[in-house]
Length: 304
Length: 311
Image (cartoon, rainbow over all chains, first blue to last red; front, side):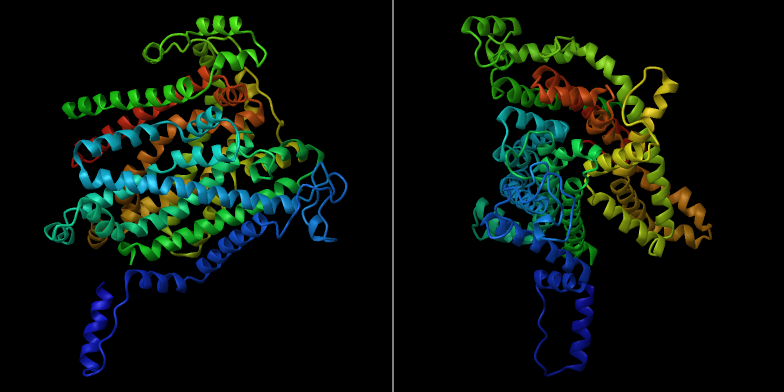
């Protein structure tokens, strides 16, 4: 803010008669700042690469089919062929292909969880913050209650109740991970609802719905984006945990299932299944951590 | 102050009621029929009806809920479906093994992470600080499961520095079994903790009172330990107190891997056998502990900072 004002003043002095300088929107400003952080951009490309890989695996263009025997049981990693890059598992299937399909499962879970939990978080947070009163109290009571129950046990309870499978993973994680976003959005709505621009909209006859979604929401949407990167990686971790406990993904390669298999294999010196899954997960989560931080730094006006 | 504590304590009641409601809905309403699960697919209708009667599942839902609320108030959660043991008894047996890992791990990791974050905030912006931040982010990104599996495999199995798993009732013989789980626990949490504490301390470093303290000529260590640390303790204590109830659960996987018969192993067993009463009791107890932890934090806040009010 202040730097822009100074810029404008100095420009008025020495550029009389020239075209007026153009201001940047918050989004463009954030984009420029993000672009300067080379490492964050690199992390963005890592995430994009994982997404691309996941899509390719989904349509069967890479690493397909993953469930056929490519070599003997427990062959150690070698550079002879792409299939053997991470060795083979007990049934002689390519661990590398399983890792790629694990990425597909992880990315799918990340997206599905976001699709379920972000709308819940935004809607409840906006309603609670905007209307206040007993509506607010009810919603706050609800999420305080939900967050008092240990996240892991809640996940396990929902999964144990709903039976095993991918849908369970989406729903269990989705229904439990909206609280953080809801809290933040509620706080922002409380701050914004009495600002001049909202009062102006009201005096022009804007409905509650329009004030919430057309006027206030665009001013807090950057928080949703920041939250998204956090949510995504915690969903990936939760999927691995659920699958590891045998409550999640069935009959599909998943990093959690692979780590679970490795429990028994390690004593035989078979480390590549665990290594492959861990490495794949590590880079994705690391990229999300660093990119998420950079995103927050560039989108949060307070940190300028 | 007294009025504040009373009001804040009363606020626990609706939360505990809400927890009870959610847990009840999950296990008793949507959870399927435990009698059918216990007896298998081929059980006769008569047998199922008998068992349902025995477990009190033939009662109307509101009566079952009332029964469950009574269990919470009296701390008597009935018997486990799979082992037929009293759940209260199981808790008592599991508490000591769990705490003998969670206790030292919690205290040591707190000491480590606070000292490291003080150290790096003192050298903020220099290479030591940057290195630690990078290490923290890397540590945060490694899955906890990998830490456990690789730790157990290399340190215990491969190099034989520690026993692979086991537990001993005599305290001095127990120590050899708990060292490795404690080390792994500390490593898993260190990244997140140091990062949080460092931010909390750095939030204070640029405050006006620090500038004033410097202006009046106080030495840098004195400013750091007497002024900054004291003020940054509020977020640090909040973060820490909230973690305490989860200590019991934090060891979920560790206990399972290292064969320690604590509450974590008990929970994993309950998950594997769909032992609903144990899971229900575990969830409720931890939620209540969490709510009480929150209450204590809020009261501490009020003591530390008189500006805090309860709305």
